[in-house]
Amino acid sequence: MNTRPGRGGVALTGPLGRPGARLLDAAVTRAAARAAGPGGLRFTERQLYYETCRVLSPATRLTRPARTPAPGLRLPVFTRALDARGRESVPGLLPPPPDVPPRLPAAREGAESDLHAYGLPRLLVCQDRSIARMLLSNHVHVEAACPVIAADDALSPDPRVVAALERAGGATVHVLHDASPEGVGLPARVRAAFGPVPGVRVASIGLAPRHAAALRLPSGRGPAPDPGRTVRPPALRPQEAAWLLRGRFAEAAAVPPQRLVRTVLRLTRGPRPPRTSVWTDLRGLREAGFLSWPAS
Image (cartoon, rainbow, N blue to C red; front, side):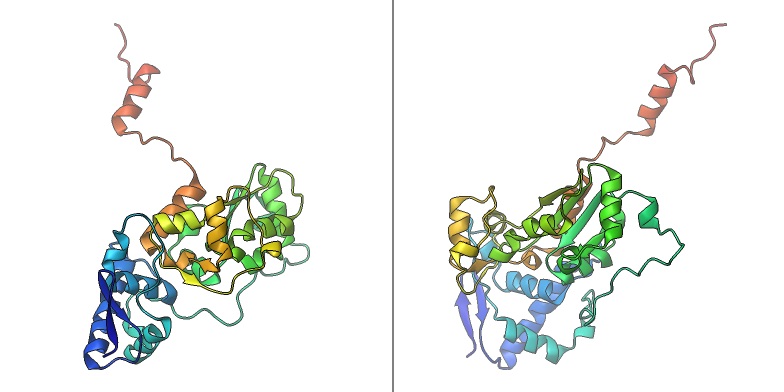
């Protein structure tokens, strides 16, 4: 038998028999519906994997205290199940990214591009190119009025992008990264790559290890990093640094897609202005005299 009980669920660890395959196929179907949600979000294969883990082990989201559990489903088992099912049969699943990522076209000589004409008040950099592609597919860049690029592009920034950020005055480069030794050091690398651009701030929007624990995200364990070569941001707590030095990590892809989109929109757009109703507008016009009847 290739299933074993997990904490509040079932862990699938090896080659599956027919009952196990049916169970996993049903879990993938349910996970895809949850990942898409009412808005019909598109999601990556990695996001679907983590959502399937949550379907198979729902109790991991309810544990106290907050912790980062190991995934209840091995990734190779999930990949084989998806291969057998066919990726095209999963609604909302994004196709694999292209081998050669697209880059900004070179500016034509004598032509003024939009990036030269306007300022860019915000930019989102994603450590994972697949997550950047997922956010673009769900039009986050339109809703947040914020271009989304992968870290590989940010570490060799296009001079036009740098100029547009500087032109905006007070621009912010938001960095979305994994809770991993490489991830927590990414904002510093982006800051160094952009250089001393006046008025441009580089800010991490997560994940930090404490975020992963609070959200009870599945975590993995890799080789322990060299403490002498590990970047430790000032905001990192001692217990978080110790967690990372044990080789632990949690991926941004493990955040449920709906929550990820909401959080990115909230953090990149900043506080929203209070909503006003038509009656508020009418009262304002009346106080200004536009809706006041003449006295005689």
